[in-house]
Image (cartoon, one colour):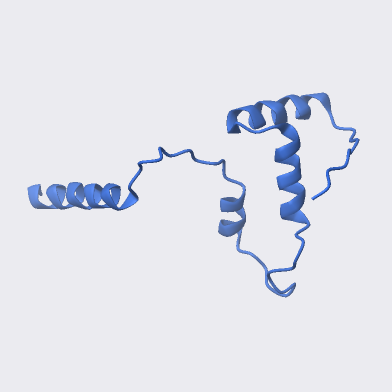
Length: 92
């Protein structure tokens, strides 16, 4: 990959919000914009142009990154939630 410089003209308020967003994500603004451009202009077309993504899928693609601890075990969390639901149903 060869990096190239790109000059954009963008509203100052948008730039400020974008910088804050990038900082909150622990990324540079350049990385965020590169990721965005890559998602709207993929190198290879994965889906047929005839397939339209559902609004739910589109909204999921725009969600912020979630940082989980390295030792996070989703199976244990699901088990805990299941057990809590079981206890509530038993108490009813």
